Length: 280
Image (cartoon, rainbow, N blue to C red):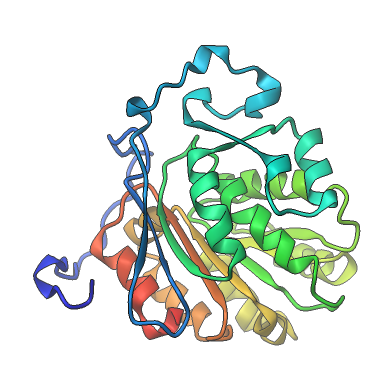
């Protein structure tokens, strides 16, 4: 991909206004791209448009979909996947039975520790696609006060939604916890919460992360334990002008980590995050 500069979009000097939740017109992710660490080549897992698959969304029960549009479901069940019994029980309690297409394509790749760029819009099950394999990794780590999974999103609402999903999957992982840090709340309250309860998973907006790096004692040391970095709604993060904040945050976390990008569209800037030395 790097050998074809003609396809690279010219960097935009001017910040764009936040879109009003504009949705990509495509019915399903076009491609999921993963890069083996230390390798020069990019692996691509082709995705088939949802409308081309013979799926009757109307026949999917709520228990089978967990609230996900049934047209995005695959035939693969979670109990057929290489995930722990604790995660499977949480998945079952959450009402999830079958994987969505994006989960089916990315789960084995992420479990192998590879970086992933997934084009997936809201409603395709992308949150579980990055949370589940990350939780599987975290469950194997020794207990510590470090933050091991960092999820960055563009809005408070999305951060809360991801945290709710994480708590469902963590139901039987009693040693793991999730915290949310976002603008519009008291910094001191978040500081107390991170000190008093487990916080291996941190879901955050970039601006508030910068606040904690500058004002919370010991926070910069805690995020040095990050094993997995997720940029969810990556295109919107860039649309809303968070690129510089993200680059500052990435400078604090280890280069030896797994990076997962989920985005409804894949403009050139999003791809650069994955191919940049900051993401190696």
